[in-house]
Length: 338
Ligand code: UFG
Image (tube, rainbow, N blue to C red; front, side, top):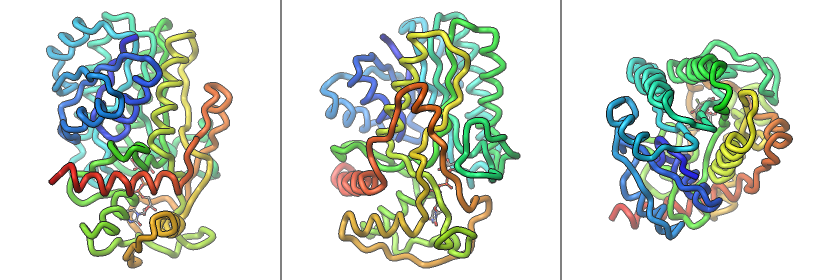
């Protein structure tokens, strides 16, 4: 069964392509490599021992996209291609509205002529804003977004829900990711941040490996048990598996649009993440306490009961596994880049 994976060379995309192949699907990657590297395709091929078909195309290029769909006639789509840096979205909102919203509309126009059975969209827990209660359920009301990036995820969900109301034969699923971290257990694929990392775990990796001198922790005076922010860190492979199960569910049975949290259901503070990394690897993380970062919510983690009951999904890896795998990948990057 053929599945188009937009952004399939990216962090979550590449791990999902591996899991799709493992489960007998035939993924085809569409990626313009603006936020990813071409050598990742070779890495995926190394893990799966299968050739990977890909098209180097911007998802906004309707003409080229139409050509690909005509050629591939896919059964399902997993749409990852999007920009995701919160800060950048504040400074360059049009880039986000264009890539995350206009290009989504373009993609919908392209698929109109095809009999797509399952459409899976990358959403984010950012749609909950600062929730009134935690853990957050899918029924927890969404709040005003903190950034253009957050707006684009809320808009994307709304556009798709409205559009697919009139498309009963195609099953829509919106996956709200919590904090994806880690890397493939082989250490052959993982996250490749461009420039200075925005996210905690890549920053820890680069500090421990000596690429950065010091990690600044954004505040330790939050109203949480240890004063540090709490997040739900999910191993990228568990997240990838959730995509495959979601896609399968969509292909196999007609269902109402699904909105699912994908998180572990456990919150960990920034300090716990640093200490767990140090325990797992024996490395030290040089860190200092800085000011709070604008837009950070003190604490958020998922209620994941729905995805467990609908898809039977449960995370397999814990925080320590994810950090160990990320560390393995960090060391591999040095070799691959040299
Ligand atoms: N943090 C630091 N120092 C850093 C980077 C992060 O202390 O250098 C802290 C943050 O303040 C936060 C925690 O680490 O408390 C996690 O921060 P990340 O940037 O790794 O992740 P976020 O929770 O901010 O962002 C994630 C996703 C976004 C999504 C957002 C919604 O990466 O795509 O959740 O809340 F929009």
